[in-house]
Structure formats: structure tokens, C-alpha cells
Image 1 (cartoon, helix red, strand yellow):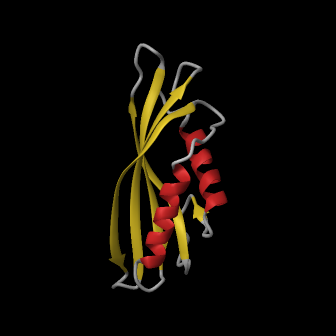
Image 2 (cartoon, helix red, strand yellow):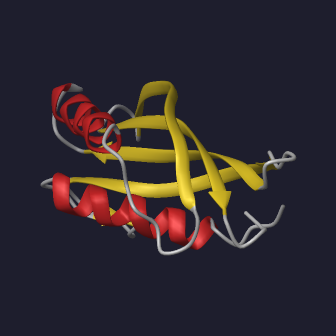
Length: 132
């Protein structure tokens, strides 16, 4: 096992979300950016190799941030993320064997001025080159 497919997984998710959503999809949190946006956040990767080949499980967090009043806008974007990631995706290295929604946590931040929803997904990735 290795981390060799991590960038390809992130690129595939970024490409899918950019095409599917009407909000910016970012890799780094912008300073004071108003509006609604999605952040590709932290991930935890574990070896899932077996006798059939190399593999890894990526647990990744996608964050929806919104300054819209109420949770409706943020929840709409979070739902669109789930819909977008339900369809198969191609990676430049390796393949996504499975992608599951794990959980979501919604909360208010900045004294109630901002809404945040953290969506956690699990992706099982295999790499035919022998490492994942």
C-alpha cells in the first residue's frame, strides 16, 4: 500500500464536483470568501491490500460553507455532492472500487453567521500497478 492514488482520487472528485455544482470547489479555504463554497478537506488513508492486489481506503471530508441565512442552501449543496459522487468516476491512476457516504455533521459557526456541513465519504481504491 502507498499513497500513490491519492492525487488521482482528489482530481476525479474535484472534476466531478466542479461539473455538477454551481459553487466553487476548492482545495484550500479562502480567506473571508463570502457566499457558498465546497472545500476538499482532510483524509485518512488505510491499507486495504489483499491477495488480489494493492488497495487503500480513503476517508475524506468535503466541507460545505455558506453565509446564506439558514441551512437550506448548504443542505442543497451537500445533497448535490452526494448525488454527484453516486455515479462512477474515472481516475488517471488506479480505480475507485467503491465509494460510500459515511456521515454528515451540520453546525453554525462565526456566532451563527456561517453554516458548515462536513460530509465524510469512504473510497476503496485499487491500483493495478501494484500499489494504491
